[in-house]
Amino acid sequence: MTDAIIFAITIVLPNLALMALGFFMQRRGETSQAFIDQASSFVFNYCLPCLLFFSVVDSNVDYAKQIVLIIAGIVVTFILFIGSELYAKRFISRPADQGVFVQGIFRSNMAIIGLATVANAYGERGLSIGAVYMGVVTILFNILAVITLSRVSKSVDDTWSSRSVMIIKKLFTNPLILALLAAFAYKALPLPPIPGVINTTGGLLAAVALPLALICAGASIDLKSMLSPSGLSMQASIGRIVIAPLLAIAVGLGFGLTGVHMGVLFLMVASPTAAASYVMAKAMGGNDILAANILAFTTVVGLFGMAIGAALLRGMGMM
Image (cartoon, rainbow, N blue to C red; front, side, top):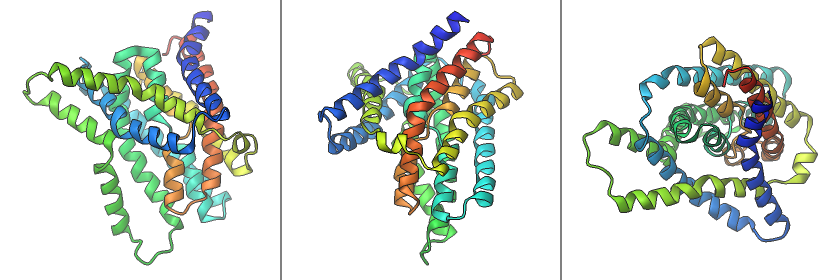
């Protein structure tokens, strides 16, 4: 069990340390909101796409064998979405709160904290498998997020047709999805090797992605929001930190997942609420204060939950 605890600390502590550095820099006035916004945009549009592209291109993973893992992830996502939708309709009265609550539960931070933790746990192989998983489930996340948040809109122009166009536009302009599609196409076609200069440049950008993203996440933490959660944000946080990881384990066992596949499923699902959930909630008229509270609380507390779950799974030989 000692080895399992050390394993859990090893995969989570680097992420916490980088987030703590970002928080420390923010408290000292060494980062501004403009810097956080610009750095986050740089990571999302350039660094993470390079990381995903080269992770897939340079790997020898058989992606056909990841089908069961991906199906398990889709099942977990749908169960969380449908369950939180039913709960929200029964116990939450304000439409502006309902969608934010639902999104806070089903949408995890796979692209930053999930991938970083998987990379710490399993290295390049885990990163490649996690990138494929993330690419497919991210598409589902965007579709479900638009569906649940669209209940707020009262615009005459907001129809299912316009929402469908919005979803398609978001998917085909998402740099992460485009990078993964490009990587799969490159692997499938008989193309020449990538030139060394491009490979080196892409590798340097990829190396920046996760550290800078985690520093920005730490610099964005609002202690006031985190320490003063509302009843709804606490309920959503419990759904994300407790229920989602337990469901991932149950579904993973049901699908017969073990080793790295169980580990990727657990770490991706157990990640805190996605940072994009706040941006999307604000853009679509949801309760952005509730979204910020859920994001802040799960970002800090969720990492400890991931460590505990990883230690238990490792100790039982399941991860």
